[in-house]
Image 1 (cartoon, rainbow, N blue to C red):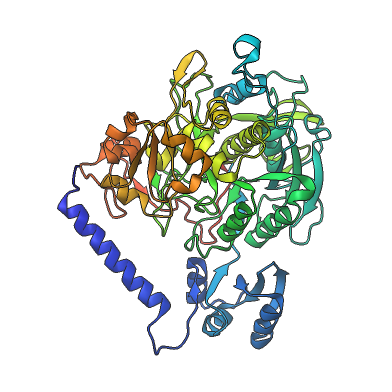
Image 2 (image 1 turned 90 degrees about the horizontal axis):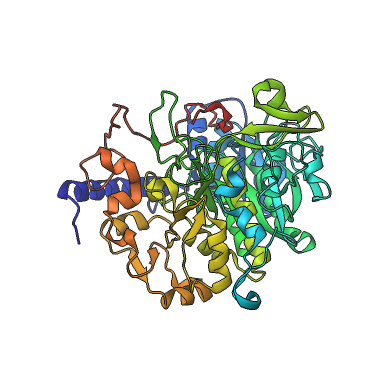
Length: 578
């Protein structure tokens, strides 16, 4: 086993010491007066001594929240199941932090979306067609379209479109002060078309969504300008959980988010995602579009919330170069890379096509009004536009999950992730931190789910062999260091793999599970597995937050969120170029 340089280990100990000091300073020591832990945005807001009010998420039952609000003379602007949103200025935030009833305070941050070859490049077309099998159909796989599965699209709404006829079975709006359920912004309709739209024959550029047989639930949380509040999204997730059985909701698509300001264990949006997954719903989230700074410099560690949740299937974007073949696929430069802030966890989980995706256009929406170049073809009531971003990639995976669920009705959220990850093709240029387990291949995932991982096989896409990575992992922050020292690399034999399918709990958190005793990743250098091309740009075996790394073009690799906006808003991804 190769050891890391001593200076790298020393830096790890230094980081651990700093983290310990921060922990003590945040939680205080015995004898000091109570002080709640504040998210980073609230810390900055409190320090500015601003007279204006911020939206603060406080935990507790309705009665407990009302009591806190009364004690401090604050207004409640939204109630959630186990929390609520209060309006407080900087001084009042300080008072709330000193209230013994509060242990954690979080900002109600603004959220925004992260903005045709795709059907073929994910092998969704093969899944819908099925395979005939051998004599009398033995070994064949029936074609599936997502029928019987409902995907909740928590976004900017869904507008009427011929490609979505009779597909949207419920509509609700949680946009503050706006009960309309139509898509005034234009993002949600585009997402809905990628997931479950049907081809109308209006253009050859759009052949329908990934799972055209699936139904959709429209949960509107983003307004006309494409932004909303974290609490709106949480309310939407809670609605989906409550109505899961009524509408057969098996998947939630979250092509939106905000910069990470606290650990996922205390982030209210991540907590809501965890509750949905524990309720049996697969949650698919976009990784974010902060993979490069304004000057083009690559950015590491910019996964957004709720993509930083270890319970979400977080999706990054690849650029297919407008071809079906995977030979020329590369990571999209804008796609956010891991690790996650605070936990240093490996994300995303998988990647999917996200560049220049043609899907449905919402008539009269803000996006098209302000960006006419997005329109591709079609008439006002049957129009199509092109968007890029991890938003589109997440929608691809939500559709793929619906296909797997129809094909394997009893598949669990854990098994869905196993099938998606192990069937993917590893992205050597992105590594785990850029591409997760790899680029999704729904046909391979379909075969694995049908056979319980007993035949991890390759699949032909575009006439070229697309080998499966055989990778699956869950990580809350320990995997990167364990992979560096190889203690976290676990090889599963072809006999052990079916047991992992039947009992996913045997796949321990923090392990990089590789199916096949001769899996080629097992002999790959750890820094290459984790970082891909970035590992070629430094002599250090380990890459840490403080490292100064430069690309061959002389650009310095940056760490953290590439957004410099004080209000922490992330814009939808169509403004970035591949």
